[in-house]
Amino acid sequence: MSVHSMTARMRAAVGLLIVAVAATAAGCGSSTADEAPDTGTRQVETAKGLVTVPASPQRIVVLNGALAGYLFDLDAKVKAADPRILGLTLKPGEFSPSWSADAKKQGTEAVPSGDDLNLEFIAAQRPDLIIGGGPGFPGLQSIKAYDKLTAIAPTALVPSDATSWQDLLKSVATIVNRADKVDPMITSYNDKVAKVKAKLKLPQGAAAVMQSQSDGKPIMLLPNTPLGGLLTAVGFTMDDKIEQKAGNPPRTAAADFVTFSPELLSTVADAPVLFVIKLDGGRDIAGLKQDPALSLLPAFQKNQAYELPADTKRPDYRVAMATLDLLAERFK
Image (tube, rainbow, N blue to C red; front, side):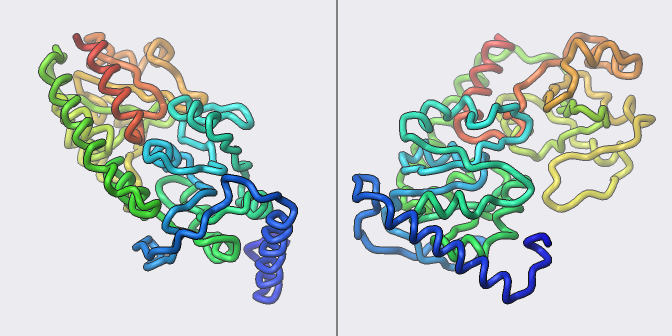
């Protein structure tokens, strides 16, 4: 029987089991420096309303790889982190290259990935704070398991509709009591945008972003995504007619892309500048050029197709800063 089909009585039993696991783990551990000191609590606004959290959390478990980087930027103490980030292929126990060194320094453990959250592993970390929510499937998992997670430790969910890295950073910083670090980070980003923009030699014409994935479906990112905003900030003019040219296909409110019939490819992807994000199993630009339909697109004909790393699709602060460096080098 799946967790989702359990009766209310069985759900309650599961919750008690989780608490027991957490208590056992706490009892078996010796008193160490990373145990949370008694520094009080505070209330924070989350996707589930007001939640009482530690004022100075010492053993954070973060259940979305898209949020983990912010915690390291904010000098928070991360006991365990979900490693999953859309498009990145990682070996078991590996973390995103952008923050793996920080995770190693802190001794952060990788949360096991699966169709359901590993509640026993989470409880065994003896967290004093769990952070979940945010974009993608990992965010959805923690939302669905919210009641079970709260039986382990105070759980704060970041809004799943917060798409920009600035908004996600602010949400995470508020939860861990590091709001004072946000403005300097955003200022550093804005200053870097201005410096990069002043030196770029951009190709002519509107730009669009194509997602290359294993099933070969034509997918275009919307211009108002975080990546689209970054490209706009440094001077690119993003094609704002993507949805219209695709026939305004239905999509969920949180979707940051459109997919459409291959017959519409030459119409939808007709921007003279094309950025390609290669996800797991997708084709790189050289591979895409071997496709007769794709090879006729204006960007390929003009040699104005440029590949971007998979993690740029939904960049956090570190990836956004690294992307600016990449653009500065590519278009100098």
